[in-house]
Length: 66
Image (cartoon, rainbow, N blue to C red; front, side, top):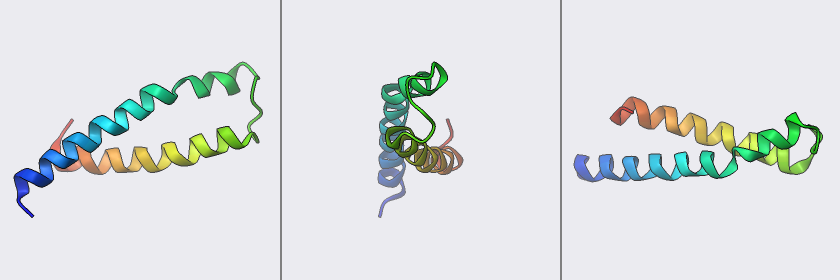
């Protein structure tokens, strides 16, 4: 695959991941203010997804920069 195309796809994916972070940041407040317990399935799913997306974002940043 063309390096330029790979880079473009990574930049697009970076935007999708950043949008996910922005769209889901409110979930941290639910735990902080006590509306959700740390055992709440929604919180657990958020943390799992965040870890995956954070790791991928780090890979993309290494490959293409900020």
